[in-house]
Length: 222
Image (cartoon, rainbow, N blue to C red; front, side, top):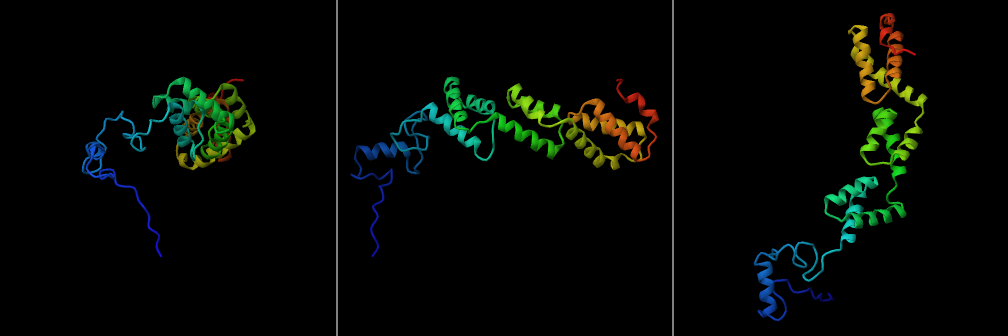
């Protein structure tokens, strides 16, 4: 035997018929059910029921942060910028962000460490480029130094050699000077120091049998 379920009356047909409340509801929603009240009226456009008070700035800030953090880590500064764009007062934003840090939902040090490891292995970026990217995300300088410091010079040079080896074939047929400048320029754009870039490229060209004696003028003086 099926149990009867008492569903609430639809908004434009409230219990009690065509009384005062029904007329107010019809004027607010209209025949199509759309909310005709002003955007600032309680319950209008906020996803809540009629008469529900708008959410406080703290609740809005928490909801924004949680939504932005879903599936994607963010720095404190990135979240602060997002809250400011959405009109959250700075005092409220800083309080909410501090709470998120306290419970580990915001961790700039962990973000920076993961960013360095990921971007170095996937894009071959050197310490200089990685530090520049982290600065644009508002990470503190001391945190950046610690994160990029985990990438030592030996690993950086090893990655530079791999990058050059991948591009070397595409430069064959060019004169050695042009090959050197093109390959070294690629490394420079990824943040590698000039001396390291030229040294790695010169060695790769020598291993291919290129006469690099004429390229010595490119090498920086000691």
